[in-house]
Image (cartoon, rainbow, N blue to C red; front, side, top):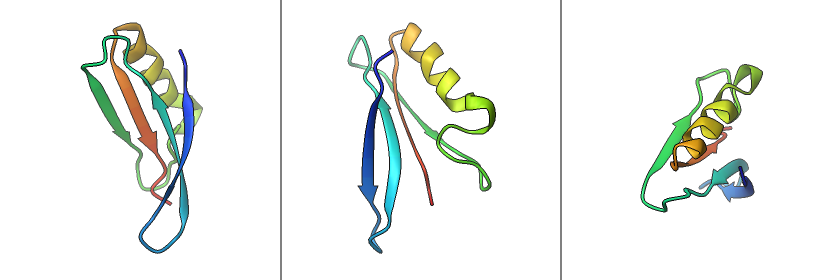
Amino acid sequence: MKEEKYRIKSIDGVELSAAWVPATDSQHYCLLAHGITGDKDEVGDFHRNICRKLYDCGIGSIRFDFR
């Protein structure tokens, strides 16, 4: 699984971390948003593991930190 790291600047100038995994079929993507106390990977790399499973099914993903 190829994962690309990005920094996204918020409207108030704060840089937020993001990770993008390209789809192998280039048509299907999933956006993962974490809970109020989490981050883009979630506890125990929960979101990263979901992204890996999605990738295995040909589905790309993006996840990001709210703050």
